[in-house]
Length: 496
Image (cartoon, rainbow, N blue to C red; front, side, top):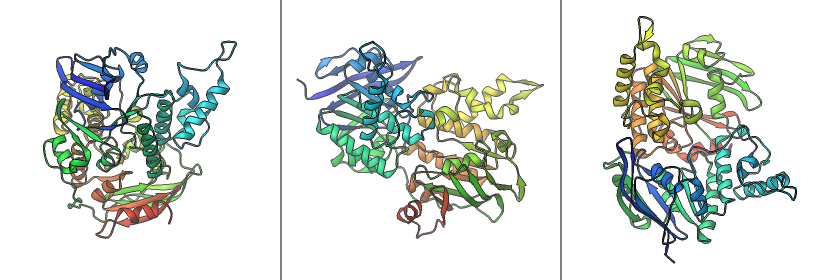
């Protein structure tokens, strides 16, 4: 019996003449957490999708427990006890949690009918294992993004996998939820399960990982022991350059008020939300998952209907009925859920990038295809979007490049106020810095930004001021001076 659960040797993958993986190696030992690291577009997701059977490899070999494996589809991977928890969820939002967890493998009673009672009971146990104390009969669409993530984890654990892949599992989790997840991973490792762990949060890697394989531009760079390498060396291997983490030094905020929210309340979730936003300001919004940050943003743009409260734009009281009204008034919202709310996945890069600003491509009353193509090309170059073609479907881009398309399309449309909701969730350090540069250039040109983020380092790095939310209220409005630290923000976030 081999010491390795998985050996992927010389794996290559081609899409329409473009090589996204070239001769990549990856090995996973029993009871090991193996970190897979690389920028967005480096090929990590493609490699995992080959292991899970979602993609077929162009060349190379896969060995499971020392024996050559044939994985042509997800069913083959399931037979090899391979489970994958993708960054973008694989859940039917209109079905209950337990039906999602048992889809295709339901328990049946002696009459051959689905034994719903047993399915619900087993699903409830799996949810409790990941610390999610909610009814398994709840519809998935009623869950928060963090709760959906935990459902995905519980669903994978129910399958008794021996090889489990986590793709950015902590991107939407609170500190307590992350601790619970790491506890589960340690238990799995102790039972001989091999973990492949994809994350861009550098502080997590050494806490949970044993070895690390680095990819860059679809190529294998190196495999190292995490206890023998510095973070700066990993980053350099990953991006091929040094990345700075210093606090933003350029500030463009003045005293001109562009947005004022007064005593906003919503559905028992938001209470007396009041704040102002100045021209050229980056206003960070921090708080734990469930504190009401996204609900506040969606009330501002009219997606959610506030029960009471007023909105003033440039000093004028304004009624925003829906997101179209918000756009007309110069406010755009970039959702944390880019898959369902930020992009049209069935369309290509060109269509997604130019959609909000198509009015700029009109010639004699018709859309000029040449002008649309020129505009899309300009945006791809301006925002360094890695794609083989403007005609590539947006769903095939990496998460980081999808996010850049979301930002590009709204910058192309133009706005006075941008609300970024988790702008760098699931994005590597290189692409993250590019997005920071875009945000900085927007405020330099006179725009104002509300930036919602769970990453406190990011909040302190980028913000002029920080609003902290706790249980639907604003618990603090902090100047981002030399004394501001993560501990201070957390104290306000938990209501100390």
